Image (cartoon, rainbow, N blue to C red; front, side, top):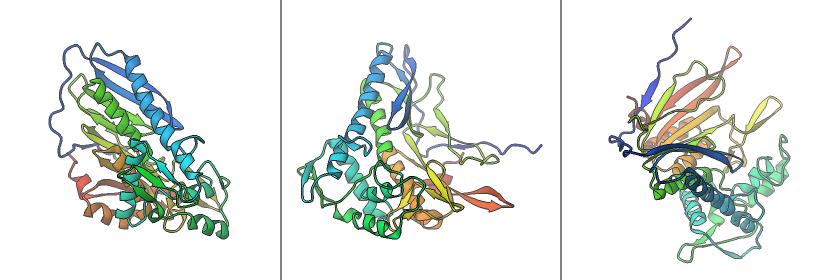
Length: 342
């Protein structure tokens, strides 16, 4: 039997020795449902801080994200904006404004590979709460109509007054960034409560800080595509670092022998067509890592690698290729990712 590939270890270049837990600190494991998935927290907290207080604070932050940014909740701020008449202005909560601002910045920097106004297309392809039927390829006429409602340049923002204008028919979708923002919000809640160390996770996106009681950082194994059995196990030390992963296996349907993944290329209006199976991004902010994982998935391996190298992004690309009737995986990494390998 062949030896298993060795485990690779990633150490953030900026990482100093994580602060150790003070005497008397207590370790807690908490979790629950949110955003159609789940959240979990491992936290080192003062002995005087009850776990019920931590759980309530985390759940309140997550509920706030849903209340502001869910397209699946009819009375959310985002849903009200999406259904509003043309020309109307809408006041934005601070979190909503932060995510919208980051999404529009990412859209401009990626020349539209990331576009928060892609919601009409997400719905049409059956991956959203309204419109298209799951598992069906939409007709060209419907695709053209949905595309006419998209375009991040149509979204007018008054930052001084913290409000956004509905140009008419625009349907914002923050699914490519909101989960990462939620992780950052959980981390902020833990920090404000006085926790000295934590590992926070929402739906597979993670952020870590500090050290465990044994003095070790929070070691996390990077996600791999299903069936990637012979790959290296890669561990990353999460101290002041977040991970986000985009994969073609998370939500998809197959039609006539072709896989249609949930990631929509806003430039074509169709699910991405290249052979990338997964992109993982490491960044201090999980919101940024989440958006970048989407951008790089849309761009594909060649364009995405160039984009990431220019911006010193730590990213791992995994491409699926058919060999002898089986889907095998080939990976490539940016210099910033490779520099973390110990």
